[in-house]
Image (cartoon, rainbow, N blue to C red):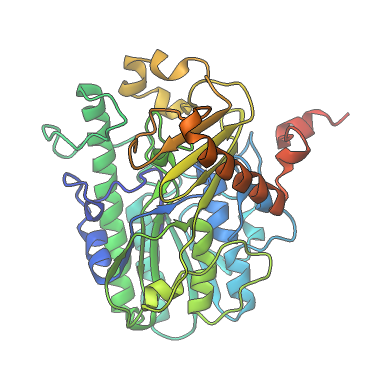
Length: 416
């Protein structure tokens, strides 16, 4: 199960004003990952990484996968649905997918939702479809279900309790604008959680829960200025909750990338992990076994509203970001620009980007406010992280190494 744009804004992640009792219950019975990050702080590239186990520049989805942007998973890169189908599972999609203009090519046996983009089905509609399907199918046959909720994508619904003062993320300016927007976000999360609870109840009623692996995650950070579409932690952090039959509940603080989700569920289902998959299974963590933690995760942005290529490496202690073009200080997507926080102070986000390289000490500066790049005392750390970042780009054949990346729109415009 996935949802849009909320990062870790759930009660089980310590956000006390959020109402998410069903996901809290899943978290209490399973494993909660406190340092899980996406490969890209945008919907389509991150979701394509979950579906393929590959970085966006490796799977082909370096921007949005809807009309006008047109990014697609590269030919020859199989979606999770196709991998499970070929292994003898029935693969079913509920809700939107937003990784392709051609969902019929992804390998699902059935798509229980119209269209391909977000916003097509509400949480209750998705839950209805899952309840009907599981009720009719019973407990026979092996299934791979991908269930995507759109409720938490902007625009937000009206808050259920408008007088509540929500928890405001520390990277936002405190005040009535942020409070108003966070009330809307929390109302959307409550709606999504209710739908997720219905899915979990339907799984239980079908008799499958005892043998089912359940994973819930979010695609990227909260849809707020200086979060979504940035490589700061607020843009890259995701909720990740996993429940494995027979495994004890646990909380894990190891670094996890969302390219690790596919190899994990494949291993749990005894399906061979394809050689092209770049993620690594964290099934041993879920099962309580030995596991060698990652020393770093990598993330990227190439296109969203416009071309803004950047890459980063994040270790447990530091973050290095390399910006490859001139741009605004941070990109603020159009739907976020309509919100009260951005409109109250556009200049806070729209000044020129000051540096090519950004280096942050995450322990001393978790909000990533003080750029240490170029400082003598941080020179050795910067050198080491730069080397690791370049090595990753070379090992994964990042197209940025060969020059500016052409978008599908550019390629179409060049046709005569």
